[in-house]
Image (cartoon, rainbow, N blue to C red; front, side, top):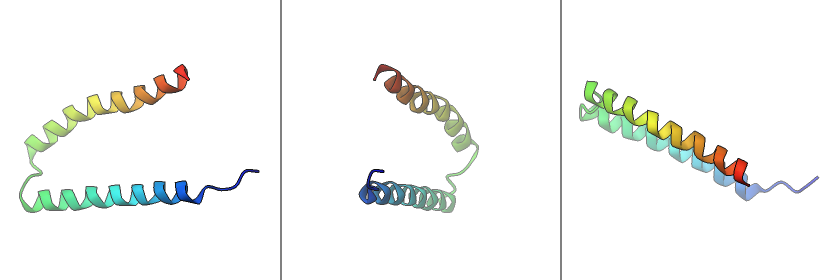
Length: 66
């Protein structure tokens, strides 16, 4: 059995925690400035389609080409 890589585990865990904290903080600031309206929802749903394709297809292509 290989040794557990604590640095990678700590980096991934802290990255997830910092990302979720930044998401929460940004949405809270946008809500205070009335930035979460219908226009925001429209932009978010359209942007999600392209970002999902790039984040799912990219790693799959990388795994198959390796």
